Amino acid sequence: MKVLFLIYIIIFVGCATPYQQSGLLGGFKEIRLSDNSFRVTFNGNAHTSIDKASNYCLLRCAELCLESGFKYFVLISENTHTENSTHTSPTYARTTHFGNYSYTNVYGGQTYSHSVPTTTNEILCFDEKPEAYSYDASYVKDSFMEEYQLSSMDK
Image 1 (tube, rainbow, N blue to C red):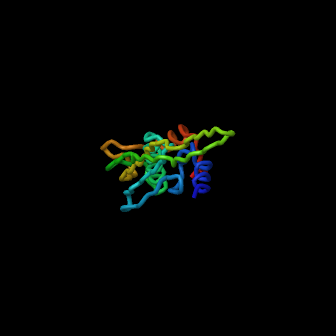
Image 2 (image 1 turned 30 degrees about the horizontal axis):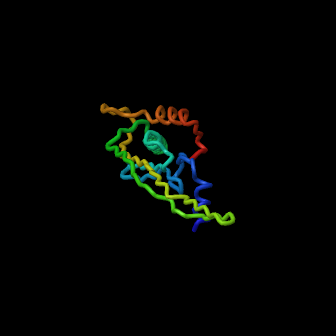
Image 3 (image 1 turned 90 degrees about the vertical axis):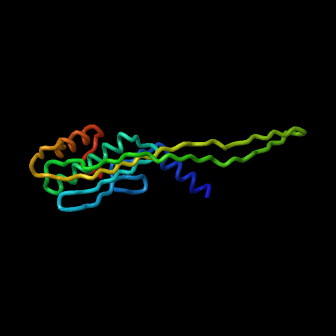
């Protein structure tokens, strides 16, 4: 069990959720609700900011809109929250003997806090710009791809 935990720490410490389909480190998933509506969720991890999770969710909304042949989308609902948790590392003691003297050191017992962001958007897509506030899917996609230095190969 300790070996698995060490492997996990070595691989994943400091790794924010990449822009990808949902996987081990998090990512996006979507479901089509009708011809022109979708629900998109982006799950981050403890190294992903809530802003980044929200932006990645909007980026996926823009991509879905364009992939479905639409140009604009409207947010019907947006839900962003963080799941907070803590864990405490195990403690262990090590005793060292030097002749008639003994020294005992206790290790571990640190408590770590984690905040994991999740954003879910429901969107309606349109061919023509609606009268309500809307997003231009191409503009949103280009802006976030540039901001996060992503290419279309990254997902």
